[in-house]
Amino acid sequence: MRSFHPPSEAAFLGQRVDAVLREFFSAEMRRHTRNAVFSSLFQDTAEFVLRPGKRLRPLLFLKARALFVPEDSADNPALLAAAASLEMMHAFVLVHDDIIDRSERRRGEPTLHRLIEGRMGRVAERERTSQNLALVMGDLLFAAGQRCLLRSGCPEAAA
Image 1: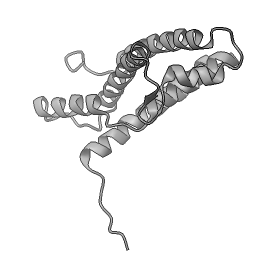
Image 2 (image 1 turned 180 degrees about the vertical axis):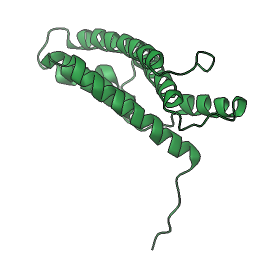
Image 3 (image 1 turned 120 degrees about the horizontal axis):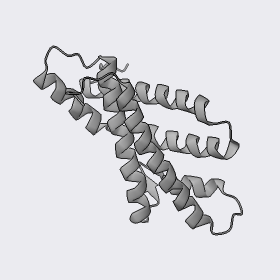
């Protein structure tokens, strides 16, 4: 029989950040996906961001905040939203980096531009078109990260 091991604090915080990310992308999906082409691009982008990862940047932000402002709780929805925004902005960099480096895989799965390319069917210049679309989606991730941070209600001093 396996013994139960409670998740580490880092894993717990990562799960909380993931929940904020899922909620954010779900709301954005309802808001922006009236167009079938954009809907599939947005789904691929959300899947890319939500892949399992260490969530180091959000974790460091939350732990640093707790170190310097001990009365704040890592369960604070505003701080979790600010932490999630860091993950989106990091994903923006990764999308661009994968294209520059001609990477095929990220976190064991196809990179965003390869995901998009797989959906393109018989489009002329499929590789270039998918890279261009991934760049735009990466830029939208940066904007989404900014929007998430601005909506978080996180005190300006914390952000």
